[in-house]
Length: 475
Image (tube, rainbow, N blue to C red; front, side, top):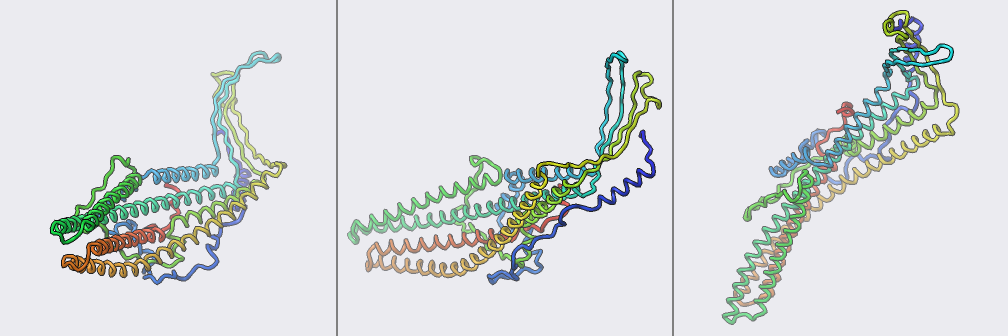
């Protein structure tokens, strides 16, 4: 190096570093999420113990479905919405390193050869080579606040990525269960079609024997064709859910299929898993969207410090050293050495109120982020309560509906026997068959609703996420 640092310069640097330990602007304090965090959820539900272990990271394995497990693995690697969120997170992390670079001096090197002419000196040549350095001392903590902004923005981006991942997984699970429910309904309708074909054959034989009139045959044919149409209509809905799943796992809908479970197998829908629920306060740590909103508040708070630091003068240390000579042969030699060093203090005396406006904007942005954070927390509590209530009510409804389905099937058996004995007409059979089929389809719909509510509850509880880590600011 071309310079030797004197003790006064070193002392001055130490003093400036000490001054730079302070940071302008308010230190961050997490805002109160809501006025009154409830001690427990309203719905009577089994709490988790310990609270941080109630949902596994691969929460979908609770349903014990191999096909669902395989599809979920593809979401992590091929979902394009998630890939976009991951790229945004990497970009936010890169900005952290960019902000931290301001802690260090910038150093540039230059080499030049200049020829010039003047009336006094005639033509002259100057060869120069050197290094120059500039370092803005972070006296007021503006750089530290800027780094704090980017670190919290990166953490918010990471939490947003996890929230999107959980959303994609939740959508996949719900679409898959709806598809399997349609498979079960198709199975039910196909069995009903077989029964109605036998009933039609029975009425046709009775018509030939003169036992029933033509209207009974027409009723049997109408019921058969109507049920066949319903079975075909299920195919339209199933195809749409299959296409939705293809998009979620990053595949073209035209190249993706999910095989239907063979007819005669009743294992279309999994058993409902038990979901353990932690205390409401744990949502503040376990839900990625809540964590993202809270980190956005922290970033907005740090931005206030950045705008405040702009009101104070900036101190920059500048230094340069090198060689200048008119002769290449004697260019790099001690007599041709040049150097300069010194501080520069700069203050913007008038900017038309621009800095003041930016400070007001930062404070308003902070207030907005606090309101957004609190609204996210309120929405999280609502999501959990909604699905806890849905699961409780749907469980009660399932019991009642199962009783209705059993009674409807029993009524159908009695009516068929009465019809064969000639004590009732075929309209009674059609009514009983329709009632039995409707109740069985309703039972499947309730089961599907319970599965969807379970998935939504798991997502509302944050899935298997365990909260932010300080290292998440850098991938």
